[in-house]
Image 1 (cartoon, helix red, strand yellow):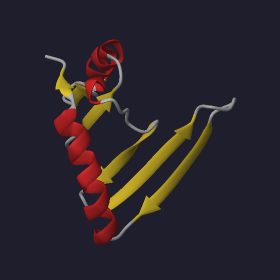
Image 2 (cartoon, helix red, strand yellow):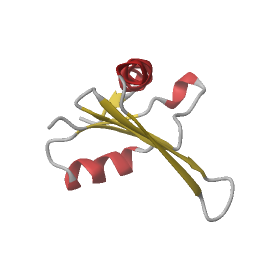
Image 3 (cartoon, one colour):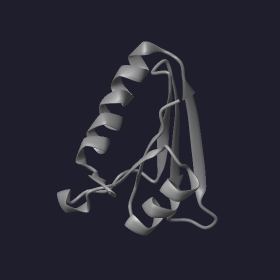
Image 4 (cartoon, rainbow, N blue to C red):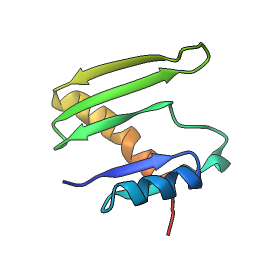
Length: 92
């Protein structure tokens, strides 16, 4: 299994890397004047997706999750996954 994780803060990245040995962890590049979604995208064998978003403007935070199983959805979201990964910095 291959696990890639991007986070907003190097401290969290280091903690995740320690807790999940073998996972590739990067820190999202904040210099591009945008920020990633709160939540994430889980890709399973590039055939299925779980997309999770968190609205933290309210308390308690509102979590939404949608499961997709179709190559069209995977293709679209794969672009977002790759773009964020490529814009992120390695923690090593």
